Length: 357
Image (cartoon, rainbow, N blue to C red; front, side, top):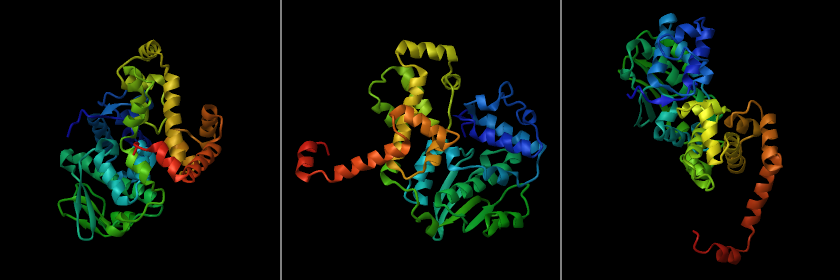
């Protein structure tokens, strides 16, 4: 494990929210983490060892098993930002799982995940050997419960594994896990894993969009490269940072922190490049919004969440400022253009686009 690997604050924010519900103070959880000096919402980038330290502090103050289950069920596709949208556009659950393996750092897991094909289905295992013993129970419970929550969201129904395998210290009674996961629990097997049936793995996902899913894996980088008028180095870094964290609205100060700059320096250097921060931020949101409206069947509430807006109304107002149309009007217009393209005379189409295949 590279414990200096950096990631956003999603896991720690959820950990601290759970801690407060369990009666453990934020201050207690942040001891010796280097995260005590500012609100966690302002800490947009932290290292894995810091997340692990928060976990160990929480467990030290609340060692009862089961906390990881409460934590894992807080995870949703929106917790995964752009990766969650990529999973949502996948054709099957198996394809969505493969996407998380392809982009493991974005999947929020703190320990390695491996896949093994079995006759009954796919066995997903968490390698907890990289963790100190006191952190294993919470991390394993969190991972398994998060899988169940996210996969249920993808399938749009309750997801029930074929079996869950557990081998961890300080575990809850086996019956508690059986009731939670609604499946057989197999203990003392030397692994912590979930077995997913082929029926679930091969089920078509309701929001599947093959074109969007195929392109989404490299969406952030590709979209930035398509903005030909943005050639200056810092502006492109800002675009990349905003693209990769599309599930929240971020201030210039927060983005500056990710890039190791002060907010004043960020604004000064962007001004020198002729690329003000606000314009870059709006460009990213508009580009992603248009892609979501055009290439998916997501409703406005879901799109608003993917872009970091608290509600569909605020997203709709922003979109109308950008385009002069409401999201529904813009989507309808795009569908009409697509339909018109299909009706375009074949010989004219061939002449116009000859050589562009």
